[in-house]
Picture 1 (tube, helix red, strand yellow):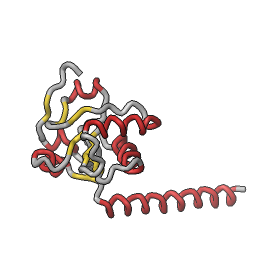
Picture 2 (picture 1 turned 60 degrees about the vertical axis):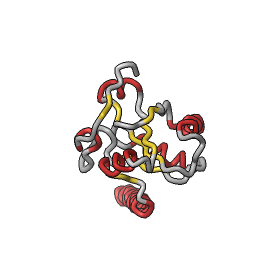
Picture 3 (picture 1 turned 90 degrees about the horizontal axis):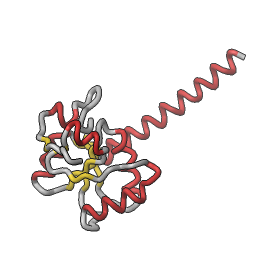
Length: 152
């Protein structure tokens, strides 16, 4: 019985490693992550639209990345509605570069995949989001400018 359980665990671990390696390969291949400084540079040069997908209470806590539009992501299950809001924010131009930012990067991963599947051509995400995580300092820790959002 112990051997059977060990084989099942081994199989699950092997499958997980394969999936992770494929995911990392895809992300590296399409360069979907941008360091915060590069994202800011692109927004300032008007080469991309930055969209902050966090919730209003998060906007109030940290402010909003300078130049970002606010399009709240309510739930991953509502990706079509979110895509409609993003499409409206970028004037219907689904081929224009879009950079998503959230708190740490989890939500942007979900919405980046959804937007791409719904026809957006160039969707990136800020590596580490606003607040960062281990190995990815994020917008705030990088010292990039933020704008207050007291009425969010």
